[in-house]
Length: 498
Image (cartoon, rainbow, N blue to C red; front, side):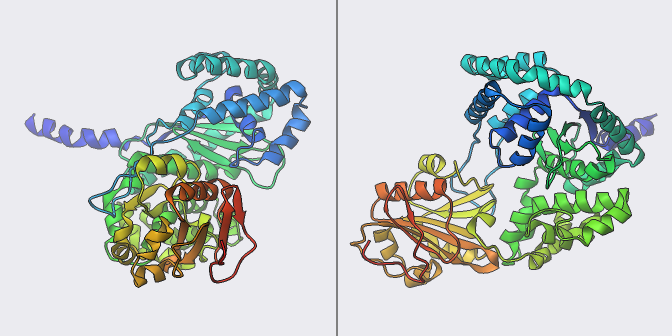
């Protein structure tokens, strides 16, 4: 009997982890309300023209609709933000923890995605929304909700698609496939992820997005489950990455950066989206439809409409696919992740690399950085370092995007080696204007410098860069006032006479 108890003790943990991720599919009015109004209110992650065309055909808008869309957009803008920790780190290679799961934008979306009908949406909203905001949502729902509910009720094809997808998922063993993905990523606790199908008309590209434990996927009337299953798999991979803590995985970070490979920062920047693409559009598609897999693999843009993510995903795909059936871990893929960088074109603009890893060299406090900078440029992980330590950091983090915010007098005191790294001409202490410029770094990274005569003007200049867009590589951008930058000078040196 003792051996039986001992054996059960070994088996029970394994059984607890053996249940694959569960997919619960939905096609409900609140999800359509959130997604379509987000698109019409200007969400940059959704194809606005496609949704405007859909509304024009299905739900012609009047003045009340226009007002309701504006109210929704304003309401959504109030519930956004994340906590960013920019404190110094004892170990500089350990990134800042990712934002907590209770990000306000995700919580706001979950009000809609967690509700099955409009009354439930309003009941859920009472928990999160302030009283005036709840009244605004009630007004929006009263205007557009009934017609969206009527459309969902009449869209028999959408209900059929959902039913067909459930059958397809079971037949093709999508949950079992995702279970192997969870093991690769190290997600020992999975559970249920909700998949919401929203109807959309013809358009260039169909979109999908993960918001917490919810996945939203756009579907056309002529789509088959196979056509959208790769997007579902891709977004669920992102959910599993979060469950596994891949964005703060010390083993993965050490494996990537421990060898001193200059490609490490670029690989870290690309790996999350690259792995999701290699699995969803690659390994899953190969299992579900080998013919479709081969067609998309050989077609530019067939996997991902991005000139960095797609070649990276296709380069790492063989290693990812080979690791899935076995007991490999994510760290075992590091050589392939590093090698995959060689297939990626060099970034053409700072925005292409300023997503995950940034070394911030600055003299001001975290509160200013949080208020002035991260509102527009939120990297996933941040290092802070004093300007005086720049030389040490530029040697240790060669392939890292570097952002320097400093006064002209501070830059004038930098050693010549640091000035060279920054592409810095010898500044005059009499400079009266602000300037920003870019310089290339190793491994596809860049440096962005924002300089000004004093802290007040530097604050204005940095805010202008953050809110007004970033210059293209090679530009020397100078401003004489906080209102904007003169982008006419593209010479190789900073203009004088500011």
